[in-house]
Length: 266
Ligand SMILES: NC(=O)C1=CN([C@@H]2O[C@H](COP(=O)(O)OP(=O)(O)OC[C@H]3O[C@@H](n4cnc5c(N)ncnc54)[C@H](OP(=O)(O)O)[C@@H]3O)[C@@H](O)[C@H]2O)C=CC1
Ligand SMILES: O=C(O)[C@@H]1CCC=N1
Picture 1 (cartoon, rainbow, N blue to C red):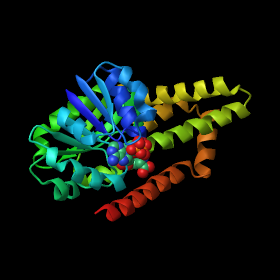
Picture 2 (cartoon, rainbow, N blue to C red):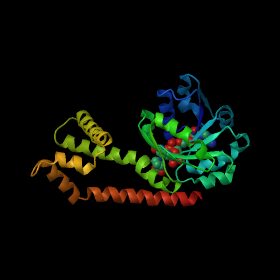
Picture 3 (tube, rainbow, N blue to C red):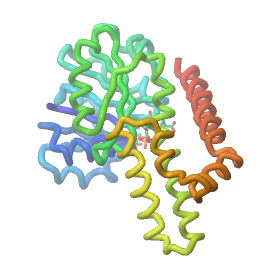
Picture 4 (cartoon, helix red, strand yellow):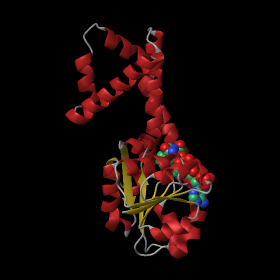
């Protein structure tokens, strides 16, 4: 697969790392305007670095866009004359609707909207995808790329903003929970490094238990909460302080913000 990542910043580089580590390309073009920060990646086999988006588009079949929303329209306009029927366009741009992309380059192209997260760099992204009527014919290509870099699911476009909050912003939310658990462990007397190790591994263990068993979280919680014991004491205190409520409020707040951003992109 000849893949171009247009916009190799935080997310674009995470995708590139995932593709390189998993050997999931034949040719990989990485673009950005100032290429100094990514020049070292040219050392990998068949990786080309350029600030020339048109060159990348001409030499690749799969185009993954990872630029900030305000740059996307201009980039699409600037490459539209070199887009052909071979290209599959995969956007990761937050709040940028398929109809908006079609209005710039036309409906005849294979257009896929995707929402990965930065764990794609370690092959652990949950990536949501949807396509225009042409893009649905190539959705398997997107799913197969993202399945090599984690797990992917096709969802209706109307749910894309919600998926962004849960899956993409979700990485930051879970990081903060891990950080808070680490701070708690330090207060209980552990050195910072072992405290973080304990927090990370316990988080990984909890997620793996659910993934592998298919159980509901409360079923697993019931196995841990000894009646009259320390776990239920801690859990109830966290809930008195609004743990679940503050998480839900934060998620809804992120969702409201994304809808605001998305309206300004229409
Ligand atoms: N970060 C995340 O976790 C996630 C981000 N997203 C979405 O991905 C997109 C990128 O986000 P993020 O990686 O955080 O943003 P960054 O700002 O880190 O990356 C964007 C990159 O685009 C490059 N760029 C800007 N203009 C051009 C151009 N004309 N041609 C080529 N490259 C260009 C910039 O580099 P330079 O200035 O050198 O050109 C920059 O490196 C956003 O739309 C965001 O909503 C989606 C899911 C998760
Ligand atoms: O914070 C943002 O707006 C982007 C979208 C999801 C992750 N980063």
